[in-house]
Length: 480
Image 1 (tube, rainbow, N blue to C red):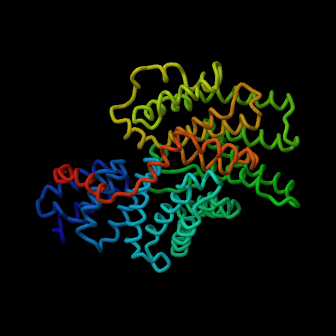
Image 2: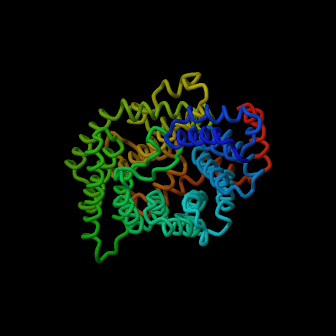
């Protein structure tokens, strides 16, 4: 629908505010325009208003607005693409909910007219590739067997390759393709893509500037962390005739990236822990799989410093996160108590994370909307999962010979915090031999938590049920 000239100028002002991140001001203008009856169902206004609610992580209202627009205006491809992005982000914060992944793929596929190789819509192609990336590791039974979904990998690469062909300087697409290669354990290809992304990006310390469920990180994911972990993963994939030389080179690269992260941000506790893990694994391999008493003493000193520096930041966040996970029913207090009991009295987990108050308090001290808190603090979920995964790796490297104690409680807690991140990292870490990795994955296979997630994912996607849920928001949508 055409707008009056003055109204169009006002709408463009709202769009400029949206693009600059001034969401509340943009909403006020869009609401002012929608208050005029002739614009109440204007597809352009409603679609752009929906993208703002997506940025504010109100995915239900965002999807309701865009779904209404796309059903009434089938050829509005931009709106289909934005709906796809809403579902993609919603799937991530909802533990890769399969029906949202499927809806995202359907919407993006419509936006590119179902032809990735012929489409010129680079943004939709890149984000469709990112959605297929979620499906690569979405099958837990496959991951337990050290496998990824090859069909999803091929679809992801097809879309990302075309996006990069259309825009060779598309940094987000390069970064996402690096992630696809990482999950496929094609680490050299992944590192190459990250190197290209770093060269062409204006901000070399960050990766993937894009709409993201990770608030608090300015919608960015640390590039240096990813570089360091990729180089670390490469230490387990070299051919025997090049093993020592190449392995040393990759360890040096991994340590250099981690140290650079700490130079840029001395308070980067994840980088600090990564440095300890990588150095410990390197030393252990140099000594044919064992560490001397002096090695262990040196690692303990580094750990003591980490716990001293990291406790007020990382572990407070972990405790708060667990309270919210308990509040929404994703983790039970009984599960946390079992992990704490296995870790043992006086263990690091009992002392720093699974404290008495967290497990024994009758009512968790959480925000009024714990689910929304979890969405908006998804970065905390990723950070805490990474810390527990790294601590489990370190415990394994040390053969449980230090104050860290047993490996399994850390892995179990990481799994409870973020199932898919934990599985993906365990699937790749060089801290375990292939035998240890298979044993650990098999031990997880009967985990009640994994069984619950698998059952959820086996439920057939019910598009009509989802549409009904979103339609229930119609009164809110109308009164905007």
